[in-house]
Length: 193
Image (cartoon, rainbow, N blue to C red; front, side, top):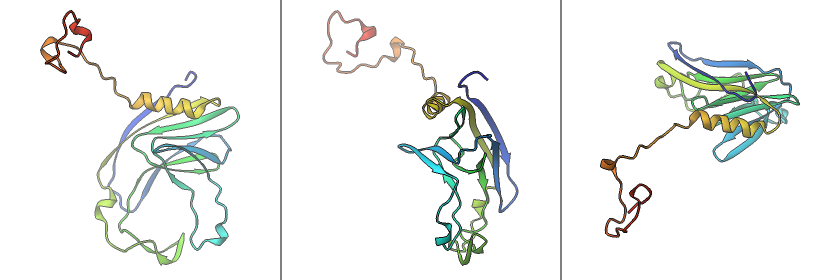
């Protein structure tokens, strides 16, 4: 691949299994523990190293949400991931894990390994949360040069997600504003009157 091109992927999963999590794993060969991910109004830098675990009752897990882009940078290059259908990731050393689906039988369960001695929520059954259906995914990956990698990745995402909308002007579909203020000698092709 040349320079900063996005490699697009599109596939379906027909899920029939309960209580599972399906993830894609990319071995980025980048040892940096930090990632930069897109949120609603900007970017946030996160780490896969959790500090202060000894002061918490439950285990802290570095699984993070994102809106559209995630990037892991190194001195020489960066690994970029863009998606409009995948919303969760985790980095473990050089590998990036992206969650495709998580099926859950109940809203909460008690005495989980990461949350010992108490419930994680109310124990109500959630049959629709098993996601037993066909799920569609679209995403792209890019290997980017270090300089302005986050900006370049966001630009690639916008190009991937933006539809090419065209308008062909026809006289029978003319849109007129201020029809009572007609101007003389106005070229109708460049006028809203």
